[in-house]
Image (cartoon, rainbow, N blue to C red; front, top):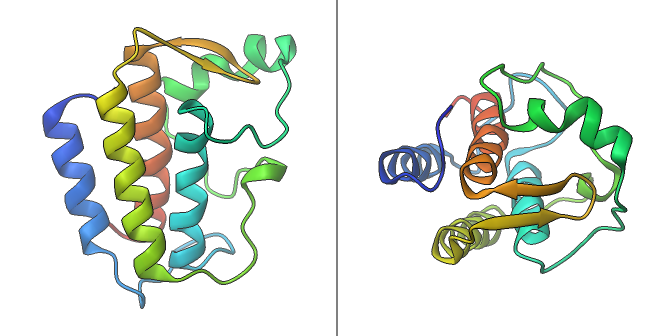
Length: 145
């Protein structure tokens, strides 16, 4: 699994984000490109401790789903979105894109040995880099990038 902490994966991800335009359209789902960029910021905000979106520790989630967050198996299209991660209002494309890129850089700069997620518990640096990449990859594919 690719890891956002690895330079080639980071470079590829930034290039894919650069391919997006305000006119980019989704091949599935309900979000427009500005909403998707805003949605993609949220996992970084959680793992960097900027927001918690009301998540509580959940042993069942950890047991059932934690490994699927960072493994090689792609997520299916149209998966349900966590309540705090839903974005329904229109967003400014350029603003959201710039903020997402800044959060990615902040995440890479932090390089913690271990990350704590309020619902899923602890992740190693490798697992967290894989998780963040997998989420971005899922949505970049959604918009053809």
